[in-house]
Image 1 (cartoon, rainbow, N blue to C red):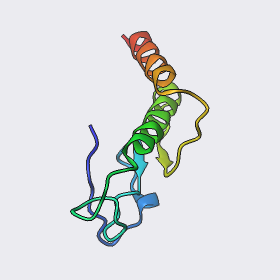
Image 2 (cartoon, rainbow, N blue to C red; image 1 turned 90 degrees about the vertical axis):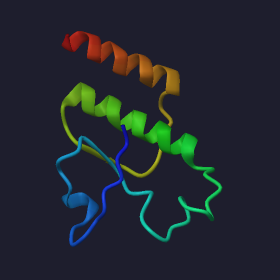
Image 3 (tube, rainbow, N blue to C red; image 1 turned 135 degrees about the vertical axis):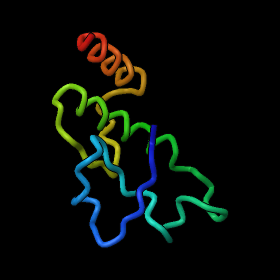
Length: 88
């Protein structure tokens, strides 16, 4: 589940307690709030799926701010589900 984290006296790269980080929602960038048309949600979701798939296969933490587009949403979900089933 995505969680918004307030950055006070630290940079996004200093955050290590989360396996996947995304900086899109910084205050004042127009991506959220009453002025946003939320046109970025599909690409944000895709980028987070990509990062989660990389985390689940490597155990490393990942910072993302764009989509690589190497896999479809369905392929990423299948990969994630397969890796999770291998953990059980």
